[in-house]
Length: 420
Image 1 (cartoon, rainbow, N blue to C red):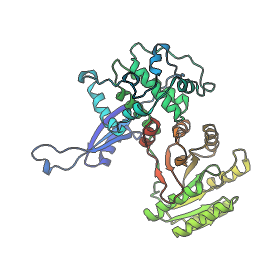
Image 2 (tube, helix red, strand yellow; image 1 turned 120 degrees about the horizontal axis):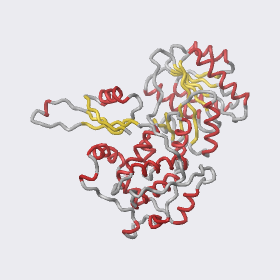
Image 3 (spheres, helix red, strand yellow; image 1 turned 90 degrees about the horizontal axis):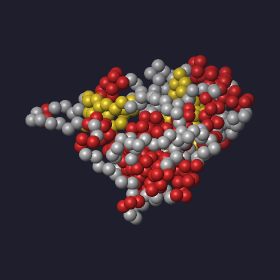
Image 4 (cartoon, one colour; image 1 turned 60 degrees about the horizontal axis):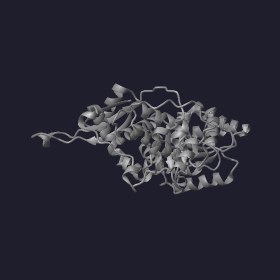
């Protein structure tokens, strides 16, 4: 992982400088104004410091993490009832950590909002709970024997690894990806490594794996089609209404709503109602010829937003119908596809759904119903499984308020046991 700081007159200028050196895959980790110094500071222009990170991809065999018997003492509950029950935080001497590590982790630790303290106080695991979480999905995990921990890994670090493992499993992060993160902690561990440094490293890794959000952006060359796909009942129609409101009312863009979902009359009428409220055009599309005509009729608009029919993964006829409408649009306008998924759907079903739609088109992700689940692990799982960026999340039925651009830092903080 590469972490560097860049300074510019604006955040954009500093970020552009980082992209020139490190490429476009950087993740902005922290932005702060620099303090003016010196006698002439009053006359100095404000400078902005941007901290960015770039993941250096490495492959490492995955394994199931199994604590050793020699560290059984670390499996006692992490409570505040006694000093021996709390994972101790080692405060390093100034010389015990390289200067670059201190500099790089400072901004991250600020963003964690004292997450290490939250973890120590709130995450408890008993011998019973530990047995459940360690064996969780064991029948699906690769059967590889765990490597003995390095002699340099302290009991404090192993306690943190167990805490991290159980916390992520509890939040329904797939065990394969949990093992990757615990392996990383073991790889970077050093004698006396403090709790907060290990936590900051995991936080960095997960934010980088999520990557940047990719919300809707304007096509400078004219009309753009935003196409929404996904199974029935995930909230596609409501999500479209929320985004249409943002684009037409807030951003003052010319937007038209289309639906090819002729199977559910209620969905079409719902979208028609939203279009009426927003005072934007609405049209039901029954054939590919009508889709071509709609693209021509709205060529002077900024966006056409297309609602498609949700369907069973085994309904090949309906799947082909949806795909034919997408292909027609791709031939005449710039298109962007969003796979809308519910955060409450079982992970196995999400895998099947995302794989089925990936056979049709490339897509970005939108997760709905975030307010209906406390475990956010599926966002990480599907991001890792598909490689598709997450554009938006929704957390309620209110139009247009209950939608937000995906923020990896908030979700990672939640997955690590903090409050989002």
